[in-house]
Length: 147
Image (cartoon, rainbow, N blue to C red; front, side, top):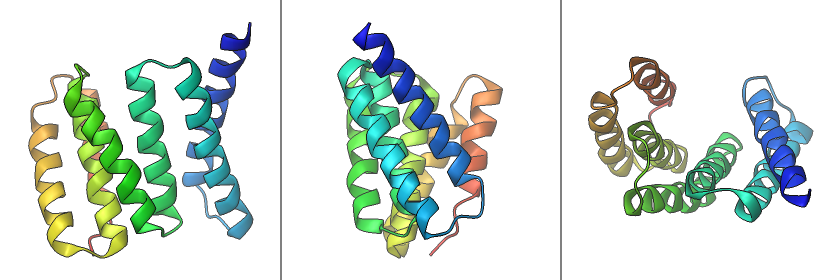
């Protein structure tokens, strides 16, 4: 029963992150975004597989980037990317983690690293087999404001 509760809570909090990311936010919303991202991660680490753990680190990176904390975004984005490289995960997830690192470097204002990671993400996106997945990750990469 506890695992079901953790899965439900992790999923609900993850979805709340997307709701917050997709709207105009004030400072209270930013606090809720960070709280939701870290809380979702906590629950996924208890009951999720490696893919959920990667995705939860990616979401923390996305949330911290959204509130302008480049250093924390880089930390979690690189964690997600590293674990994705060490495990047999779907092609879209590998590309997504590279997109996350590019986004983190953009927020940090590091042009050279943003360009390196953006190029890697583009290469990884190009080899995603499922067109819908390829389009989604490509749109996320295109959404990044270059430094």
